[in-house]
Length: 135
Image 1: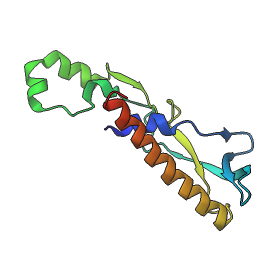
Image 2: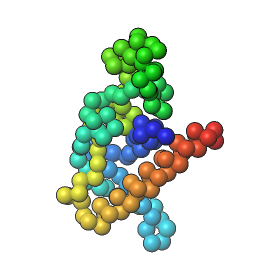
Image 3: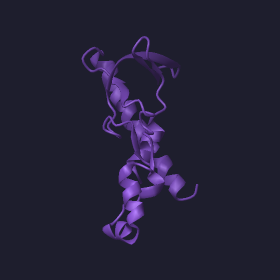
Image 4: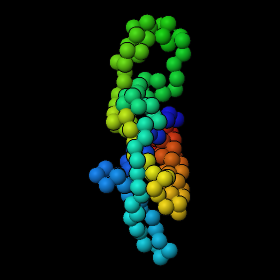
């Protein structure tokens, strides 16, 4: 499994940039869905480290060895020049991503946000693994 695959799965946030809020859907005690606005801020994308691009996972998903480059010096040059780069799947090339702002978010809402993030990450990992197994 590759972190870039998970970044693509997690990049589907409901974000309102004008209001700088993330919309989080939760269930109340009666089982009714509620949308809660979570204050947001931008942070440097952890997947591309602010570059906006990354190598296409199809090229190096399972790692490359020195032998891969020794066998094909043109491939090595193209790889390091960025020929196989694509827009970052996490930030879609914007170099930043919205995250919940811990400093302005009420503690109980922030705790719910973190729990939701953990659940989303786990679910994204499961979906990637299922695709790898052909499901």
